View (cartoon, rainbow over the protein chains, first blue to last red):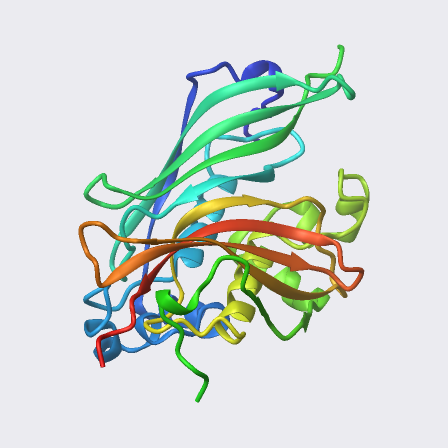
Amino acid sequence: MPQLLYLDDLAVGRKFATRSTTLTLEACKAFAAEFDPQPFHLDEAAAQRSVFGRLAASGWYTAALTMRLLVEGELTIAGGLIGLGGEMTWPRPTYPGDTLRVETEILAVRVSESKPDRGIVTARNQTLNQHGEPVQIAVVKMLVPRRPAA
Amino acid sequence: MPQLLYLDDLAVGRKFATRSTTLTLEACKAFAAEFDPQPFHLDEAAAQRSVFGRLAASGWYTAALTMRLLVEGELTIAGGLIGLGGEMTWPRPTYPGDTLRVETEILAVRVSESKPDRGIVTARNQTLNQHGEPVQIAVVKMLVPRRPAA
């Protein structure tokens, strides 16, 4: 069992890693067919004529895989990873064959004024490809419980 | 064929709608099993003990379905819907059985200085449930081509 982390454990600057995962062409196309059926995510010839230059993964597939990596990663928050929202950018496309991992850094920690048993943690989740280049940068706010009194 | 929209067509304040879609319990669980395998997205009993009170859809499923609705909706941008990033909040959970649709409003339009054949459009995509309550509010930046000279 991984150690459960509470608000009290998440000091600003603390970092967390995940394993990595490699995107297959088949899975990229399957996700796109279900959720983002645009030609540059489904068809190589159409993708060559698009701004991507070749078949690119949907940004929402990158986002969904990022979540999967986070859930299985070192940031094992008590009560789970519950996002309230955040700011997200895709500085470059993700392509089939890319290998992604996520690096998290804690940016801010705030105890709730109305509900002192919990708080809001701001974290930066950088999804990096095999060249160490960010393909998604998400600065997110998460709901995190405080450690219960012993 | 829907009319293709260029930067020149996207005046600030213009609105676009989508069809609606109803979430099934099975699809919510299948998405969560693949991308967000946390107990409150997979197991009713665990969800009852969580902050959600009952089994809730992954926010990333809401995001992915929002994209699907947008791709099939009225915002038929020439070259496709290409997001660069944005700010996203989930003001309330989405539950199986909810019926979602998306309302888009154009907030800003800017021609690129370095590449005058294209520009950046800022839009607010509100994903609403069957009660008209927002379950996701995304203010996104999109890459949009200008209308080519005739």
